[in-house]
Amino acid sequence: MPRLTYNIAMVSDFFFPQPGGVESHIYQLATKLVDRGHKVVVITHAYADRKGIRYLTNGIKVYHVPFAIIYRSATFPTVFSFFPVFRNIMIREQIDIVHGHASLSSLCHEALLHGRTMGLRTVFTDHSLFGFADAASILTNKLLKFILSDVDHVICVSHTSKENTVLRAALDPVMVSVIPNAVVSENFRPRKYPPEPPAPNNGFGNATPAVHHLGPNDPVVIVVISRLFYNKGTDLLTASIPRILENHPNTRFIIAGSGPKSIDLEQMIEQNVLQDKVEMLGSVRHEQVRDVMIRGHIYLHPSLTEAFGTVLVEAASCGLYVVCTAVGGIPEVLPGHMTVFAKPEEDDLVVATGKAISALRANKVRTEKFHDQVKAMYSWDNIAKRTERVYKGIMGDIPEADFYGYDVGNTAAWNGESHSGVRSFALIDRLKRYYGCGVWAGKLFCLCAVIDYLLFVFCEWVFPRDHIDIAADWPRKIYHSDDDD
Image (cartoon, rainbow, N blue to C red; front, side, top):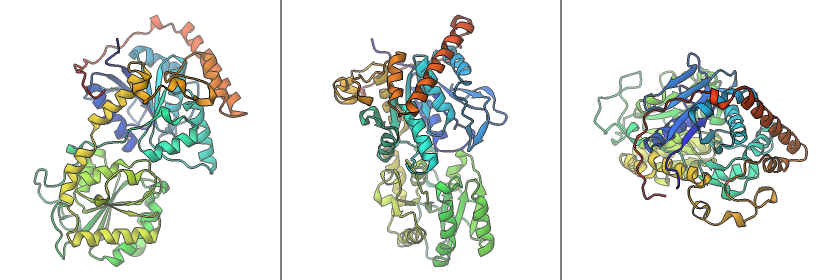
């Protein structure tokens, strides 16, 4: 009889309290899976005083493992030293499925390798886009090919992301599903839901609510909320702001976020004497994002690469007109009447922002309707149902023909071997998959897999399973099957 619920471990270096799209995705997905009766634990690294085990209010248990951070919250790759801790958690929590997130997360990749060695089903969600030519991309892509060659299923957040991941990791497209991000629309309501007092005067005047028509003398407020890194287009933003303000003097900027490029923005403000027109808020918590957004009329997103862009959905839900670069999966996110697209170039971004300002002043855009439209398009309940269907597919609880759309057992498999959608755990089969990853890399990957297996056998002998206490489960919500399967 098919199982109705599973014990799931979400693993990533990126999780709260750090703000970001991956962090929010993991939390919201885990919350909805718990609502559907599943057990979810999150494994991430320690953040400042957050070490050991923490419980979130909705019953999700978070393991903060003590590993060193090397760059942008990613831990130093240890390959094997994480295994004993990981194995202990998997046994304590009786995990069935390991779900890793983010290509740059060392914990994620190590967990997927160790999970397969332990005989657990594995899923990977890719949230980013990468190139193929620079040294960093080549290294990352080779690592991704190693890990994903033995993963049961891959999820991408957009069709562009799927194409990118399939090419980078040499995957069979049938093993990759597209499940986008979503937004909790009730947490991103325009100012009219419900009526609120005006925003405080911070040197910019009271921001006109986004759902009201602009008067001829009302300032247009442009909001930017982003990590201030190169790939997020901060250099493009720094070059464009003076020109936008020169062309449209009755315009103000509110910039929230932190990163190494913040110093460039601050220097630009000083050099152009724009302190009265550009407000820098620094890092803001996720629950404060809506409060910042409703102070504006336009959301500007100058990113150079983006697999999805959850913040665009949040901005539209708040009733902001979106100006963004047409890169990666961004064109898939919102319909055309909510966005003005620009090339990732300074001149085009300035022109696109000018078009948005003119459209708002001419009352050509009905931003008051955006919230309800976004609410109908994006729902975490729907994302959880689709992710749950992936879990059922890899666990063999739904027929392969229903899960993949046809009988994958009769199709050509990765590396030329015939396969079913449910991966074999046999070490010899795993080594065959790893061996096909490259002339030299394939042999190295096989060596890693053998060492990982020997370490597993050693841990089973030195730390027997029956000596590990099983953790008590948080009371589960009653699961009601529905017709969406």
